[in-house]
Length: 166
Image (tube, rainbow, N blue to C red; front, side):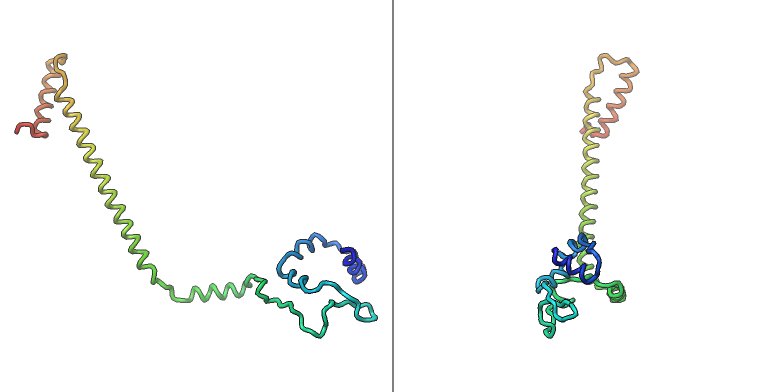
């Protein structure tokens, strides 16, 4: 690392101040491909120029579009893709099946709601019958004449509704 700082200082006549950024960026896939080759530098000419240790005549194995690096698509490409998608005809082949399943689910929900309502009505009828039976078997010994008269009318009405006369 000291050698790299010395080389930078020798080339730029400035101290390298971006070590934190370099530390973060060197771990990115884009830069790992370059460092995996050979990162040592050697002097080539008498003028003091540096080049990589690999032969300058051979093509570099670094390719910006290598399969190891995934670049995000650009804004223009994303807009073009979105425009192509919106202009295409919508494929509704699977919608019919979805509609069938939704319709069946709704029908099942309606049937369940009707059944629940029927059961509630039946429960209310049973509670009313129980109350009527309690009224029929109520002890009338402690009732006044007015209360007894009302009780007898209610009992007759209950008998008609329950059809006890048979």
